[in-house]
Length: 222
Ligand code: ADP
Ligand code: ADP
Image (cartoon, rainbow, N blue to C red):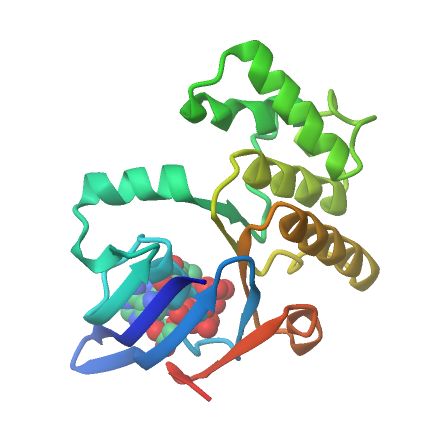
């Protein structure tokens, strides 16, 4: 069952007199529950592609169909709703609120799910336990190690129960051993919840953990 369909996708940027072909004709599909790595060197178009798939930027040409919905045809307020309701993000730099504890970092976005505070705390505790942080729930983001912060980031994304999770270089700030642990954890929980995970990375070793790789060079799939 396919969840994402990309057809003839182009994104051009004007840079003075020249035009940069950031995405130069991409076609692919991603199935529900798949863990796909988008891999390629720096400047190959990975961030641009992720921004398109997340509805943060409009394509120059082409189609992005997610769950039967044409993203390129949605209005800005519809895109905001799409991002809030259908997708989750895991960032390279974690993006935690540093003066809040782990529990509040995970519980706060659940406001958008219309949950009362008791329910939000319950769900946040559940996901922080899943990522192995049950003893750190009252610790502030800035008092945690990188690996712990990324576990909070994973719990925060998963707790929202989005259909699709985008992870942009999620292990980019972690050492090799912690990277492997965080990847394994992320992969297992996402599988458990039958969510679709799309990870961007320039690192081949990291990409290998995925079910499938989409390799991009100069905006083209190779
Ligand atoms: P990656 O994420 O693989 O490093 P990017 O998607 O960031 O690649 O960039 C792909 C190409 O598009 C690069 O040549 C980059 O300089 C260019 N690019 C990306 N975003 C913009 C932008 N907003 N304006 C102009 N050029 C851009
Ligand atoms: P990454 O580290 O993932 O390769 P970059 O550092 O290349 O990402 O880009 C960070 C942000 O800056 C992205 O949102 C991208 O769209 C934008 N960007 C990248 N290259 C350019 C550029 N040449 N001009 C303007 N914006 C750019």
